[in-house]
Structure formats: C-alpha cells, structure tokens
Image (cartoon, rainbow, N blue to C red):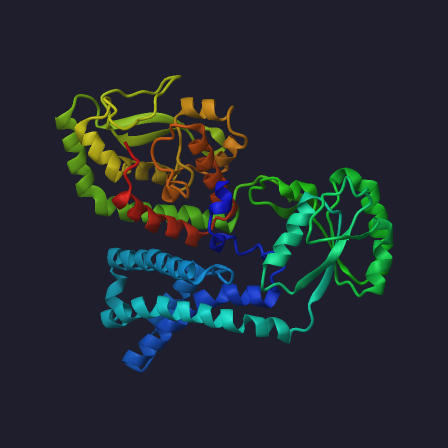
Length: 469
C-alpha cells in the first residue's frame, strides 16, 4: 500500500512513535529547529562580534517554521541527508523569497546569510548523527526497561508488539500476551507467546513488576474490559487501550472532547484551530509571491494560447472541493475541446485533443498557474490532494474505499501523490488507488514543513517527469 511507502520522517510530531522514550522524542523534536536557529547566532557572532536584533527575530521565525522537527532516528543516514537538504531548501527558499519581496533582506549582511545557508543544514546533519550515537546512553541513563503485557493476541495487539520490537530506541520490553481464546482461535505468532487467561492478568502484573498494560480486546468485549479494569485497580501499572478501531485507516485520529465528554476522532481534517490559520496564511503569502513573480510569464502564455488555437484562454471545470462541495477550477486551456460533462476522458499520450502549445504547458505545469487565484479565493490550497473532474469523482468513489475522505481538506495545486510518481494519467484503477493512498497519508501526517518539502519536490518533478500529457 502507498501509505507504507511514505517516509516515516513525516509522521506527525504530536504522535510519539510507539514505545519511543518521551525524553528522546522531545530531543528529536527540538534538535533540528534549535540547531538551525543557533547556527545563525554563531555565524552572526563570528562575523560581527555581536548579535543584532534582526538575527534574533530571523532565528525565531526559523524555529517556528521547523518546530517540531522530524523523527529521524530510525531512518537510514542517506535518507536523513536527503530529508534535511530538501526541507532546508524549502524553508530557506521561502525565507529568501519573502526577504527579497518585502525588502527586509537589506537589513542583513549577505555574507552572513550565504554562510548560514550551508552551515545550517550541515550542523543539523551532525547534530542528528550525534543524537543517534548518544541515544542508547540517554535511554540507559533513565533506568531499566519498562515491562509490558498485552491483553488480547489479535491483529492490533501483534502489530503493537511488532512495532515495539522493531524500535531500537524503545524503553519498553514486551513480556507476552494474555488471551481467553483457545489456541486454534488465537492469532499465533512465532515471536510471542500467550502467558495465560485474562483472568490471571492482574495477579501476573502484581507478581512480576509489570509497568504497562495494553488492552487490545475487541470493542464488542465491553463486559470483559470492565471486569478486567476492576481487577487491575489493585496494581500500579499504567493502562492503555488499543481498541480495534485503530487498525482502520484513521484520518487525524486523536482523543478529543465534546462538552466535557471524551470522544475519539476517526476521520477529521488536520486543519483545525491554529493549524488551519497557519495553512491558510502560508497559502495566501506564497500565492501572492508566486503570482507576482509569474505575472509576465502568465501574460505571455495567455497571449500564446489565444493566438495558437480558437477558444477561451482560461479553461474552467467543475471539481469537488472541501467537504465534497463543487468548485470551479481555472487552468490555461490546453485542449481543443473543453469537456465538463457526465463523461470525461483523461488526457493521454498522443491525445489528439491537446494542442501543440498545450503539450508544452502540461509538461511544464504552466497551465496550472491560474489555480493560484483559486488559492487566493479560498477554494484551493497550494498543497493538497489534486482535484478530479466531477465525472471522475462519481466514478472512483464507487470503486475505491475511502475515496471521498481526501475531500476533508481543500484540493491542492500539487500534492504528496504527485511528487511520488502519480502525476498525470491514471489509466488503471491501481494507479488511482495508489494516488488516493498517498493523499490520505498526507492528511494523516500534515505539517507546514511537509508542505514546503512537497513544494520543493514539485519543482524537481516538473523538471524531470514526463507523465503529464
């Protein structure tokens, strides 16, 4: 599945990886942003002998843009290098572009900024490697491993055990499982054993100094869960639920409350509260900057479209937007025909409907530039699931489970699927399924840093990919 292919470095930082030590996770989240900010201070001090206020302000902006940092301890070194470089190019590119557009860059020494530009990512790489070396000592310093048992040897319980076992930086050691079912009905696994019936769990916890209990029983087993919790009141172990709903594809799954009643979010937008303000603010700022820089190229393209083929310059098509509401999306016209009916054929290689100029515009994605006006209108975002024609939506929602969940956010000009090879035609259902999987992965793991990374990757994809017909 595509979501399994997505790099773990983009797991949302508010979700501590299973078993990851709290102190180590905090250091992971802080080390990148702190190093980027402190490296600016060091470079400024080495050049000027002092730290002017503008550098302090810039360091705070950098910290806020990159916090929390990505969890990279379990990522292979070359992927750490690639991630840090790509993320830094996106963040620094945004800062430099805003500095030039606003004129604030004149308040900084250019030699300081250029030196910081290569010192910052190099310092971050060194810091992550050092953290990787000292991580075992940090874990050992905090005392012995915490012992855990799981009530319920089922799919989600075994998945939890597997993740605990595969994390070299976990402070949790799984002792075993408890389950009431017969051996034939239990989901067997060669690496784990059933220590006894659930009725024996409380006594086992008391006698064997168990620190953590994970209850992985089906939600239909409420009477058994209530009885087990009553027995476990006589222990000092921490107790966690691993309900079976968490083996489904949750979108921003989290614990919340409604008028004081705790609820579990199963499918929710990532853009609520401050996250929504941050997302919308970045969309507005970046769109204005891009439209200002692209004004002359857009005028040239518009004239070329008008002179090379009959028809309107701007192609308008109905798409599904936020919460499945219809929106009108703008593009430079690249085809002779402007289809927007009940049946729409996807553009394909050697498509006779595409004009000669249209082929160039589609390959370079210049036809998408008018969609930045959609972003300013609030109908779209710069990064998000690509919008499909209404006719395609109605077809694929019947063929792909969870298809409409991608509409929990505004559609984007570019997206996680597009930078992972699913740009252009989806001539088979498997390709569309993979695209949707990537879209839902983006919803689960959104951060501003991920958006900037996708924008940087999009530029590279447009330059080298040939999937847009």
